[in-house]
Image 1 (spheres, rainbow, N blue to C red):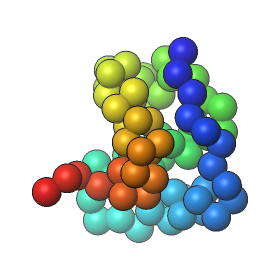
Image 2 (image 1 turned 30 degrees about the vertical axis):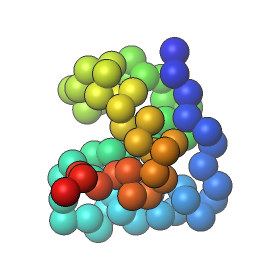
Image 3 (image 1 turned 30 degrees about the horizontal axis):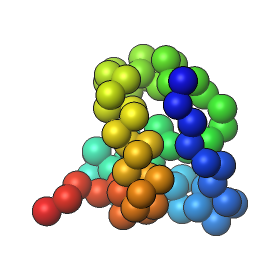
Image 4 (image 1 turned 120 degrees about the horizontal axis):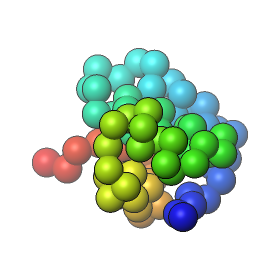
Length: 76
């Protein structure tokens, strides 16, 4: 089981805003996944919701931990 640090209220609001307003599907998906994880949704459930592998969820969490908001976006 993997965990992410609990996000502060400002970051949680920003994740929700990005989820609702980003033009990029991948970014919206990552933001929603992180928001749900912060609410306590288990990795196995996130895998089903987003139809991705455990490794993908792990990578999203790792990029969030390393780069915070910038980790949501694709690298150039």
